[in-house]
Length: 271
Ligand SMILES: Nc1ncnc2c1ncn2[C@@H]1O[C@H](COP(=O)(O)OP(=O)(O)OP(=O)(O)O)[C@@H](O)[C@H]1O
Image 1 (tube, helix red, strand yellow):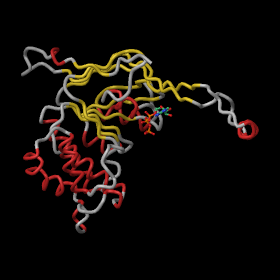
Image 2: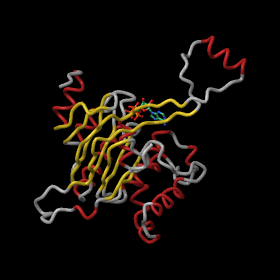
Image 3: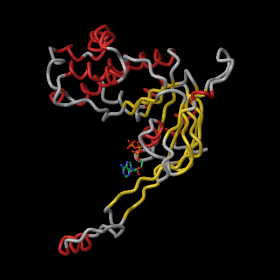
Image 4: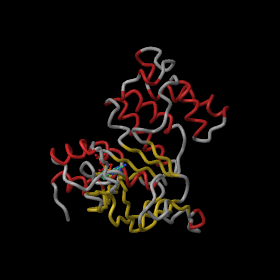
Protein backbone atom coordinates (compact mmCIF):
# COMPACT_ATOMS: atom_id res chain seq x y z
CA UNK A 1 0.00 0.00 0.00
CA UNK A 2 1.24 3.48 -0.71
CA UNK A 3 1.82 5.51 2.44
CA UNK A 4 -0.06 8.57 1.33
CA UNK A 5 -2.49 8.78 4.32
CA UNK A 6 -3.84 12.26 5.04
CA UNK A 7 -1.91 15.43 4.37
CA UNK A 8 -2.42 18.82 5.94
CA UNK A 9 -2.87 21.85 3.69
CA UNK A 10 -3.13 24.63 6.27
CA UNK A 11 -1.41 27.10 3.94
CA UNK A 12 -4.09 26.68 1.27
CA UNK A 13 -6.63 28.96 3.09
CA UNK A 14 -8.14 31.60 0.79
CA UNK A 15 -7.42 35.30 1.28
CA UNK A 16 -11.03 36.47 1.64
CA UNK A 17 -12.23 34.06 4.29
CA UNK A 18 -15.29 36.23 4.96
CA UNK A 19 -16.96 35.32 1.68
CA UNK A 20 -14.99 32.48 0.15
CA UNK A 21 -15.93 28.89 0.89
CA UNK A 22 -13.01 27.46 2.79
CA UNK A 23 -12.20 23.85 1.85
CA UNK A 24 -11.50 21.70 4.90
CA UNK A 25 -11.26 18.23 3.33
CA UNK A 26 -10.26 17.43 -0.24
CA UNK A 27 -10.67 13.81 -1.27
CA UNK A 28 -9.03 13.27 -4.64
CA UNK A 29 -9.72 10.05 -6.54
CA UNK A 30 -9.11 7.92 -3.46
CA UNK A 31 -8.74 4.16 -3.50
CA UNK A 32 -8.48 2.16 -0.28
CA UNK A 33 -7.56 -1.50 -0.26
CA UNK A 34 -7.56 -3.74 2.81
CA UNK A 35 -5.06 -6.59 2.72
CA UNK A 36 -6.31 -9.58 4.65
CA UNK A 37 -3.48 -11.90 5.63
CA UNK A 38 -3.98 -15.62 6.02
CA UNK A 39 -7.32 -15.60 4.21
CA UNK A 40 -7.12 -18.29 1.57
CA UNK A 41 -8.72 -17.63 -1.76
CA UNK A 42 -10.29 -21.12 -1.90
CA UNK A 43 -14.05 -21.57 -1.80
CA UNK A 44 -15.52 -21.88 1.64
CA UNK A 45 -16.96 -25.36 1.17
CA UNK A 46 -17.17 -27.87 4.01
CA UNK A 47 -14.67 -30.22 2.29
CA UNK A 48 -12.06 -27.50 1.85
CA UNK A 49 -12.53 -26.43 5.48
CA UNK A 50 -12.16 -30.07 6.60
CA UNK A 51 -9.04 -30.65 4.53
CA UNK A 52 -7.49 -27.47 5.94
CA UNK A 53 -8.21 -28.66 9.49
CA UNK A 54 -6.87 -32.17 8.83
CA UNK A 55 -3.70 -30.98 7.11
CA UNK A 56 -3.36 -28.20 9.73
CA UNK A 57 -2.33 -25.94 6.90
CA UNK A 58 -3.05 -22.28 6.75
CA UNK A 59 -3.12 -20.62 3.43
CA UNK A 60 -0.45 -17.94 3.25
CA UNK A 61 -2.52 -16.07 0.67
CA UNK A 62 -3.32 -12.42 1.06
CA UNK A 63 -6.78 -11.35 -0.04
CA UNK A 64 -7.50 -7.82 -1.03
CA UNK A 65 -10.72 -5.94 -0.37
CA UNK A 66 -11.01 -2.86 -2.55
CA UNK A 67 -13.26 -0.89 -0.15
CA UNK A 68 -13.14 2.59 -1.72
CA UNK A 69 -12.89 3.04 -5.47
CA UNK A 70 -12.01 6.42 -6.88
CA UNK A 71 -14.01 8.68 -4.57
CA UNK A 72 -13.58 12.47 -4.95
CA UNK A 73 -15.26 15.39 -3.19
CA UNK A 74 -14.48 18.64 -1.41
CA UNK A 75 -15.93 19.56 2.01
CA UNK A 76 -16.14 23.14 3.20
CA UNK A 77 -16.08 24.93 6.53
CA UNK A 78 -19.48 25.07 8.21
CA UNK A 79 -20.87 22.06 6.33
CA UNK A 80 -22.40 18.99 7.94
CA UNK A 81 -22.19 16.14 5.45
CA UNK A 82 -24.06 12.87 5.78
CA UNK A 83 -22.52 9.66 4.42
CA UNK A 84 -25.08 7.03 3.48
CA UNK A 85 -25.03 3.67 1.70
CA UNK A 86 -25.83 0.04 2.35
CA UNK A 87 -23.83 -2.19 4.74
CA UNK A 88 -20.25 -2.65 3.61
CA UNK A 89 -20.40 0.16 1.04
CA UNK A 90 -17.28 1.87 2.40
CA UNK A 91 -18.59 4.69 4.63
CA UNK A 92 -16.60 3.85 7.77
CA UNK A 93 -13.53 3.16 5.67
CA UNK A 94 -13.85 6.61 4.09
CA UNK A 95 -14.14 8.27 7.52
CA UNK A 96 -11.15 6.39 8.92
CA UNK A 97 -9.11 7.45 5.89
CA UNK A 98 -10.10 11.12 6.33
CA UNK A 99 -9.04 10.79 9.97
CA UNK A 100 -5.63 9.61 8.74
CA UNK A 101 -6.06 6.15 10.24
CA UNK A 102 -5.92 4.25 6.94
CA UNK A 103 -3.44 4.71 4.10
CA UNK A 104 -4.71 5.27 0.60
CA UNK A 105 -3.74 2.88 -2.18
CA UNK A 106 -4.04 5.67 -4.74
CA UNK A 107 -5.23 9.26 -4.74
CA UNK A 108 -4.90 11.72 -1.87
CA UNK A 109 -6.78 13.17 1.09
CA UNK A 110 -5.92 16.71 2.15
CA UNK A 111 -7.29 18.23 5.35
CA UNK A 112 -7.21 21.79 6.60
CA UNK A 113 -7.11 21.36 10.36
CA UNK A 114 -7.13 18.37 12.66
CA UNK A 115 -9.71 15.66 11.92
CA UNK A 116 -11.14 13.76 14.92
CA UNK A 117 -12.91 10.47 14.42
CA UNK A 118 -15.69 9.66 16.84
CA UNK A 119 -16.57 6.07 16.11
CA UNK A 120 -18.62 3.53 17.95
CA UNK A 121 -15.31 2.01 19.00
CA UNK A 122 -13.64 5.27 20.01
CA UNK A 123 -11.06 4.41 22.61
CA UNK A 124 -12.16 4.88 26.16
CA UNK A 125 -10.91 2.61 28.92
CA UNK A 126 -13.54 0.07 29.89
CA UNK A 127 -12.08 -0.67 33.30
CA UNK A 128 -11.99 2.98 34.30
CA UNK A 129 -14.99 4.79 35.67
CA UNK A 130 -17.00 7.17 33.48
CA UNK A 131 -15.64 10.22 35.30
CA UNK A 132 -12.01 9.10 34.81
CA UNK A 133 -12.76 8.58 31.13
CA UNK A 134 -14.20 12.09 30.85
CA UNK A 135 -10.97 13.52 32.27
CA UNK A 136 -8.70 11.31 30.14
CA UNK A 137 -10.72 11.89 26.99
CA UNK A 138 -10.62 15.66 27.46
CA UNK A 139 -6.89 15.66 28.17
CA UNK A 140 -6.35 13.48 25.09
CA UNK A 141 -8.23 16.07 23.00
CA UNK A 142 -5.73 18.70 24.18
CA UNK A 143 -7.70 20.45 26.96
CA UNK A 144 -5.78 21.80 29.94
CA UNK A 145 -6.59 20.38 33.41
CA UNK A 146 -8.31 23.69 34.25
CA UNK A 147 -10.47 23.45 31.08
CA UNK A 148 -11.34 19.85 31.96
CA UNK A 149 -12.46 20.93 35.44
CA UNK A 150 -14.64 23.71 34.04
CA UNK A 151 -16.25 21.48 31.35
CA UNK A 152 -16.58 18.31 33.43
CA UNK A 153 -20.09 18.88 34.80
CA UNK A 154 -21.45 20.04 31.42
CA UNK A 155 -20.16 16.86 29.79
CA UNK A 156 -21.70 14.60 32.42
CA UNK A 157 -25.00 16.52 32.27
CA UNK A 158 -25.05 16.40 28.46
CA UNK A 159 -24.44 12.65 28.44
CA UNK A 160 -27.37 12.13 30.82
CA UNK A 161 -25.42 9.21 32.32
CA UNK A 162 -26.42 10.22 35.83
CA UNK A 163 -30.10 10.67 35.06
CA UNK A 164 -30.98 7.31 36.59
CA UNK A 165 -28.41 7.22 39.40
CA UNK A 166 -24.74 7.70 40.09
CA UNK A 167 -23.44 5.78 37.06
CA UNK A 168 -20.56 8.11 36.24
CA UNK A 169 -18.53 6.64 39.12
CA UNK A 170 -18.99 3.07 37.83
CA UNK A 171 -16.54 1.40 35.39
CA UNK A 172 -17.51 1.88 31.75
CA UNK A 173 -17.75 -1.88 31.26
CA UNK A 174 -20.97 -1.74 33.30
CA UNK A 175 -22.59 0.68 30.80
CA UNK A 176 -25.05 -0.36 28.14
CA UNK A 177 -23.85 0.24 24.55
CA UNK A 178 -26.16 3.27 24.36
CA UNK A 179 -24.78 4.77 27.58
CA UNK A 180 -21.19 4.28 26.45
CA UNK A 181 -21.96 5.86 23.05
CA UNK A 182 -23.59 8.83 24.78
CA UNK A 183 -20.54 9.40 26.95
CA UNK A 184 -18.17 9.14 23.96
CA UNK A 185 -20.24 11.64 22.01
CA UNK A 186 -20.49 14.02 24.99
CA UNK A 187 -16.72 14.01 25.51
CA UNK A 188 -15.96 14.58 21.82
CA UNK A 189 -18.65 17.25 21.47
CA UNK A 190 -17.22 19.25 24.40
CA UNK A 191 -14.52 20.57 22.11
CA UNK A 192 -14.75 22.49 18.88
CA UNK A 193 -13.24 20.35 16.14
CA UNK A 194 -11.84 21.49 12.80
CA UNK A 195 -13.21 18.33 11.20
CA UNK A 196 -15.41 16.07 13.32
CA UNK A 197 -16.10 12.60 11.90
CA UNK A 198 -19.00 10.83 13.59
CA UNK A 199 -19.60 7.16 12.84
CA UNK A 200 -23.07 6.00 13.90
CA UNK A 201 -22.68 7.63 17.32
CA UNK A 202 -26.26 8.81 17.30
CA UNK A 203 -27.75 5.47 16.37
CA UNK A 204 -27.33 3.97 19.82
CA UNK A 205 -28.67 6.91 21.82
CA UNK A 206 -32.35 7.15 22.71
CA UNK A 207 -34.70 9.67 21.09
CA UNK A 208 -34.08 12.44 23.64
CA UNK A 209 -30.31 12.10 23.40
CA UNK A 210 -30.46 12.01 19.60
CA UNK A 211 -32.24 15.37 19.55
CA UNK A 212 -29.69 16.81 21.99
CA UNK A 213 -26.76 15.56 19.91
CA UNK A 214 -28.29 16.83 16.68
CA UNK A 215 -28.53 20.30 18.24
CA UNK A 216 -24.91 20.04 19.38
CA UNK A 217 -23.79 19.05 15.87
CA UNK A 218 -25.52 22.16 14.52
CA UNK A 219 -23.63 24.26 17.10
CA UNK A 220 -20.33 22.62 16.22
CA UNK A 221 -20.92 23.55 12.58
CA UNK A 222 -21.57 27.16 13.55
CA UNK A 223 -18.31 27.14 15.46
CA UNK A 224 -16.74 26.90 12.01
CA UNK A 225 -15.92 23.21 11.83
CA UNK A 226 -16.96 20.59 9.31
CA UNK A 227 -18.94 17.60 10.50
CA UNK A 228 -19.25 14.22 8.72
CA UNK A 229 -21.96 11.89 9.94
CA UNK A 230 -22.22 8.23 8.96
CA UNK A 231 -25.62 6.85 9.82
CA UNK A 232 -28.30 4.40 8.73
CA UNK A 233 -30.84 6.68 10.37
CA UNK A 234 -31.97 8.80 7.43
CA UNK A 235 -33.95 11.10 9.71
CA UNK A 236 -30.84 11.91 11.75
CA UNK A 237 -29.09 12.72 8.44
CA UNK A 238 -32.05 14.88 7.32
CA UNK A 239 -32.16 16.76 10.64
CA UNK A 240 -28.42 17.32 10.85
CA UNK A 241 -26.86 17.55 7.40
CA UNK A 242 -27.71 19.80 4.48
CA UNK A 243 -25.43 17.85 2.15
CA UNK A 244 -25.22 14.09 1.72
CA UNK A 245 -22.85 11.76 -0.09
CA UNK A 246 -24.16 8.33 -1.13
CA UNK A 247 -21.53 5.61 -1.44
CA UNK A 248 -22.20 2.14 -2.85
CA UNK A 249 -19.64 -0.65 -3.40
CA UNK A 250 -16.91 1.88 -2.67
CA UNK A 251 -18.03 4.29 -5.37
CA UNK A 252 -19.61 7.70 -5.01
CA UNK A 253 -23.15 7.41 -6.37
CA UNK A 254 -24.49 10.89 -5.55
CA UNK A 255 -23.32 14.05 -3.80
CA UNK A 256 -25.82 16.87 -3.25
CA UNK A 257 -28.56 18.38 -1.09
CA UNK A 258 -29.67 15.91 1.60
CA UNK A 259 -33.36 15.85 0.63
CA UNK A 260 -32.51 14.97 -2.99
CA UNK A 261 -29.85 12.36 -2.20
CA UNK A 262 -31.69 10.65 0.68
CA UNK A 263 -34.88 10.47 -1.39
CA UNK A 264 -33.01 8.84 -4.27
CA UNK A 265 -31.31 6.43 -1.83
CA UNK A 266 -34.60 5.44 -0.22
CA UNK A 267 -36.14 4.80 -3.64
CA UNK A 268 -33.01 3.00 -4.81
CA UNK A 269 -32.81 5.37 -7.77
CA UNK A 270 -29.25 5.70 -8.93
CA UNK A 271 -28.66 8.66 -11.23
N1 LIG B 1 -10.44 -4.27 8.66
C1 LIG B 1 -10.91 -4.72 7.52
N2 LIG B 1 -10.24 -5.67 6.84
C2 LIG B 1 -10.70 -6.12 5.64
N3 LIG B 1 -11.81 -5.67 5.05
C3 LIG B 1 -12.51 -4.72 5.68
C4 LIG B 1 -12.10 -4.20 6.94
N4 LIG B 1 -12.98 -3.24 7.31
C5 LIG B 1 -13.92 -3.18 6.34
N5 LIG B 1 -13.62 -4.06 5.36
C6 LIG B 1 -14.38 -4.28 4.12
O1 LIG B 1 -14.46 -3.04 3.44
C7 LIG B 1 -15.73 -2.86 2.87
C8 LIG B 1 -16.33 -1.56 3.38
O2 LIG B 1 -16.55 -1.67 4.77
P1 LIG B 1 -17.04 -0.44 5.66
O3 LIG B 1 -16.97 -0.86 7.09
O4 LIG B 1 -16.30 0.78 5.28
O5 LIG B 1 -18.56 -0.29 5.20
P2 LIG B 1 -19.73 0.60 5.79
O6 LIG B 1 -20.36 1.28 4.63
O7 LIG B 1 -19.24 1.47 6.90
O8 LIG B 1 -20.70 -0.53 6.34
P3 LIG B 1 -21.78 -0.53 7.54
O9 LIG B 1 -22.91 0.34 7.09
O10 LIG B 1 -22.17 -1.96 7.61
O11 LIG B 1 -21.10 -0.04 8.79
C9 LIG B 1 -16.54 -4.09 3.21
O12 LIG B 1 -16.48 -4.97 2.11
C10 LIG B 1 -15.81 -4.70 4.39
O13 LIG B 1 -15.92 -6.11 4.37
